[in-house]
Structure formats: C-alpha cells, structure tokens
Image (cartoon, rainbow, N blue to C red; front, top):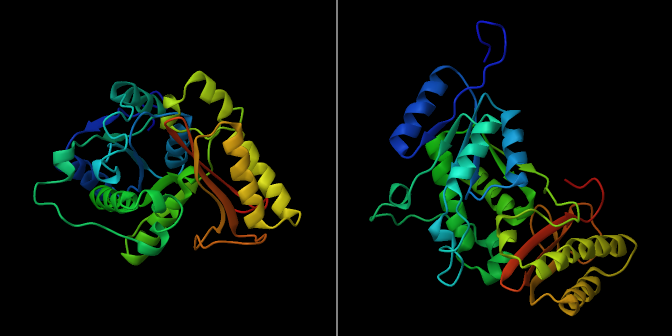
Length: 295
C-alpha cells in the first residue's frame, strides 16, 4: 500500500478469532479480486515459520497465518497439553512481518460437539510417521481441509521438514478438487544443521549438542548411497550409529520416493532419506533429497 506521501505503508494485522470474522475479511478481499495465501501453524513460531510467511507474502496479495494447536492430530499420550504456546509473541512477530490477518480460533470454533467428519489418505499415511502415529495424519488432513475451505486461499504454504505431511496435503487437494496451489518451502536449519522445530525447545543442553548428528548422518547416507552402497544396509548402519551416539530410539530411517513414499532400495532422482528419532523425550524429524537438484 502506498500512502499520500508516496511512501509504503504497512497494513495493520487483523486478529480474527472466529469463522464469521474470517469470512467477512475473506469476502472483502475476494470482492476486490485479491489473491490469498494461507500459512497454517500451531504457533510457537521460529525462523522456519518466518520463511513460510515471507514466501507467502511474495506470492499473494493478502496473507493469512493461522495459529491453532489441533487436538485431533495428537494421540492421548502425546504432547498436546505441553505443546509450546506463545500467542502474544507469535502475534507480534506476524504483525512485524506484515501478515494481513492472523486466524486464532479455539477448539469449540473448529470442532462442534456434533463434529464427526474426518479426512483420510490411507496409503500415504500408513508409512513413516504413520506407523507409530496412526491417527495423526487424519487429524492433520482434516484441519487443513477446514482451514482451506474457511480461508478460500489461492495458495497454502508448508515446510518440507514435514515432507510426509506435505505429500498428504497435496494428495488431498487433488482428490477433493480443492482449488488451491500447495507450495513446499525447503527446511530451515540452525547453523549446525538441526532442522528448526517448535519441539526443539524440549531438548536439554546435552541433547541439543547431540541433535545435529541426525542431519550430519543423513548427509553421509546420501553420499554413500549415491556412490553405490545399498540403501537398506546403509540406513541400518545409520540407525545403529544414532543409537550408539545417544539417541533413545529411531522410529525409522528410510529412503523413499518423494512422490509415492514407497521404499527405495537404490539411488533414484526422486528419492529422499527420511528419519524420525528420539533424543530423550523429544522426537526429531528430518529428511533430505537423495541427489542434488531433487525438489
């Protein structure tokens, strides 16, 4: 927006707490022919989220960021209650970035007492994280569909750190004919290679020192498999290494096709190496392309 003095004027960020207010804003933007980008988050924002927002700002006329810790994607024993919540700081950060609206519904707003519809993508959800979190992706797909419908977004931006989630959302959009372009943004990392995540706040000082070994070992896996070592054997070696280095458990460390998430046993341009591993109580996720140039 340009002011009367010819200087750029940043629009004020609107905080929308319910669907009625969101629809009113969206209808106004749509009536002006403006495009909308959605950045769905669960809050506890970090530099990775900032990169998603910046990408959205460069893509659409208006940007909506949502903050909602989605209860239906957590199993009873998982960290829904303890998940980091810093809404005041998050709102300040999003306002400073120039986001047009922040949607902050509560659970009752998103899920009425009569709510019973769930979205499932069985094949893509059955592998990787889905093996140990069987209901997780149904919860993710359901909330994303609701947010896409509510925001009427033309674009939706997600990070590649949660690559399986990104793949599932892309499949949902195709299968349900939702008119939105899903944009994946490369993982943002700390200087030592650790993928940024809100759950990194759970790490102790000792665990934080160990955490980058996950990414560095994945890089070694990529190098060795590209140079001809068998994928299955190399992944097992990497699993053993992480356990020896102090990781409590490795849920999976596998090479899979980027498009289908099917297992890959040799080097392939469309493959990625995926890993989920525990350091203490913290579950770390990471993935990287098998070959340079893979998106």
